[in-house]
Image (cartoon, rainbow, N blue to C red; front, side):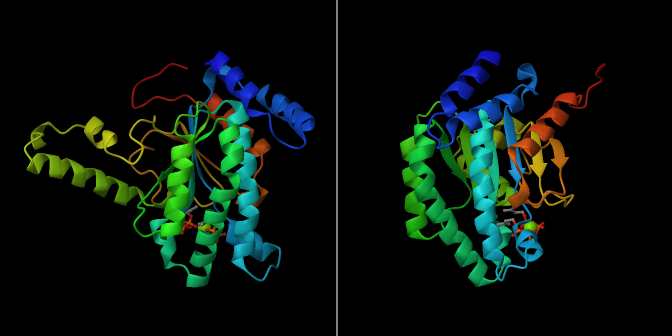
Amino acid sequence: MGSQNAQNGASATVHHSSDTAETRETKRLRERLDPSRMPEHVAVIMDGNGRWARKHHLPSRLLGHAEGYKTTKKIVRAASDLGVKYLTLYVFSNENWRRPKHETDGLMALIEKATRNELAELHENGIRMRFLGRRLELTPSLRKEIERAEALTEKNPGLVLNLALNYGGRAEIVDAVRKLAEAAARGEIDPAKITEDDISANLYAPDMPDPDLMIRTAGELRVSNFLLWEIAYSEMWVTPTLWPDFSAEHLVQAIEDYQMRVRKFGAVVNP
Ligand code: IPE
Ligand code: IPE
Ligand code: MG
């Protein structure tokens, strides 16, 4: 794991404008962490864009989302440089369609623009992009960007960046159960023999480990339908900091805190 981290760190810091200062900063942050206890998978509920816009007396929540996008770019880079292997970001939930059309339209446009504009740099940095969620409700042009990003970065060796878009934890479980029920109806599997692993294997990203650490910004103490199946034993870290104010420093604080915890998975563990 240590050498893998060093490798990720070395390969991920190539293409940015202020390279030297950034590399120094990342190195300083990385040195605070124990490379043998890194969370392999970090999941983030990026919340508080609307409150950030209000706090800054901005006329539209969309300006908060635009600021949140800047944070997302920084955190993807930081996670990659720190040697996190999987980063799953909650971009848009199934329930977020309940927002005013002006906001959902603006968000979808921002997401499409971001996917298009970031693709080259993410690819150069060896990052693999995947999208989790129901695609049918997305516009054809956004679907096209998603497919392009996934296809181009599919074989990349670095950070796996999962973007939960039009995602719901319950919908993900429903979709998995449907696939299993269909297989049972075809006589391919015996319902009595369905296991937890079978459910896991039919989720949107079946080949990734469950999140070790789940971060939520903006202070709410709830899960909001994110990764319900996968977070059974994830460690949670909540900060009052709004997503647009979140930084690599906060990410490192969360990982430092994670590294001090004792994970027990229901067993008795002597720390
Ligand atoms: C998170 O920020 C972004 C999305 C849910 C898309 P919010 O828009 O939920 O911000 P608050 O919670 O209203 O502050
Ligand atoms: C969760 O935040 C969804 C995303 C971050 C995309 P919400 O702002 O939608 O969650 P609630 O409504 O406060 O539970
Ligand atoms: Mg919110």
